[in-house]
Image (cartoon, rainbow, N blue to C red):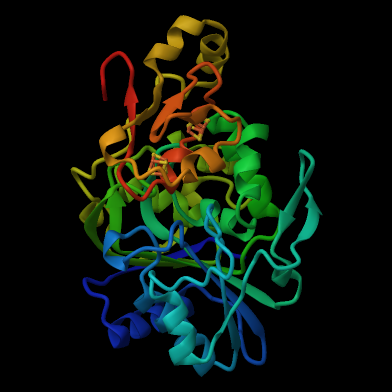
Length: 370
Ligand code: SF4
Ligand code: SF4
């Protein structure tokens, strides 16, 4: 791993243009030699949906990366596991399975025979393919995230954890700082060998599943997940140190000693800042000491952002009920489209909002309604 980060402007999902930019970025950042190697590509497929919604990595970026790797002598595998991983899931709506069909890359189901690995706190199930490939290349999407503010290279590793096992981690790490630490532990366990961020179109507002597509016009590449996330979150308008994964990784001096150590190649950052990007409101309890106090003063929970269920939009699919790691929600026995929250149980992980594809969960403050 090195500290190099390259960014290039790219306005469209046009295969040849994206391929050429990837070739240039990869070379500039000393991406690993892939000749004769087995390579796993890990896009972000949070939920399998239309690429125009910007919930997942765009299939053109995945295809360009597959073709680039194949042209350089690699055998390519592609896979991800959304939180709601239905049997035989294979990324059809997101267009990513189609990429496998057209390129000959092999789709991998992460839920088959996962292996157990040790983390700082306990054990975790993870896709067994990570031990069978030579290299992993992560392709995150430029998106907001209600819990960790910005989802990038470090957060994308979570998809290696199959299906519902992800939700259990929220029960073990019950606040955004704890969850950020877990994500850093997980990425440290098997740090992908290269990161390519799809920032051609990104997601602002209530990401990672319900936000709004926005043109960012960038592709970012690095072997260093922290270098990528520090700069990408800055481009979105965040102070990179409010993002818990950045803060934890930098504090531990894991992949960088400081932001100044990033060896950057690309347009002047001030010219590519996404001014006006609709960020996730920074929580009043982002501060660890304040959070400790707030947890103990029940009244202050009113000021937390929390899930609000929009009964008119609810289809009663129960995905939110099944994903909730602490069983804080349930449908009314008489009406399954009426989801009811037990606020005192809720740990504000926002998994319910991530999995709801019907706009039936909003994240709001009880007091101010935002
Ligand atoms: S709130 Fe959304 S996820 Fe939950 S049951 Fe209703 S439609 Fe399904
Ligand atoms: S209700 Fe939603 S935000 Fe609260 S704990 Fe359950 S999944 Fe997380």
